[in-house]
Length: 168
Image (cartoon, rainbow, N blue to C red; front, top):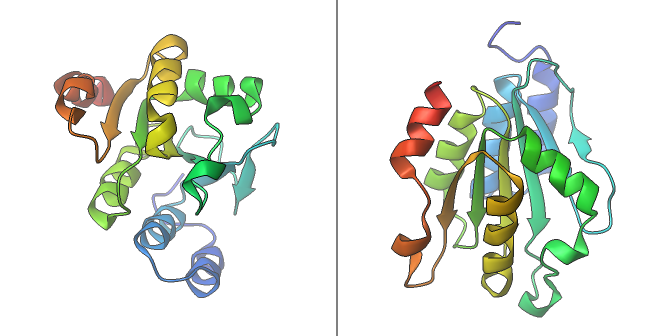
């Protein structure tokens, strides 16, 4: 498969449909690179695939547990456990992200999707520990945490190991 998007109209449609924000920029880059995008929201038992699905393993999957109201976040219990576990088993790299939306982080994660499935868990701080525990329990993927909490350094798992694992 070529590294260029076989569906250039899809990238253009994304650009027009999504409001300008750091996440939109990353999604458009992924679409242009031909990387499949999947979204899992609370209550869904399968991914919503945005655009064309490819079969070469290059995916960027988002578990969206970051509603505008912090108290509306559900944590892992609000999601279909089979769907979440399928994502965790397939992932090469997992990021639990509860920090402010910053383009540099989204771009770095998007770059990892060229190697295999990247799972981005957009969480609220009040559920990040639950998500981290689930990832540690159910996934063998490299993991990192992007969080506004002070003890972040103690909870980031294997930065060097993550980089090495991505190249293996």
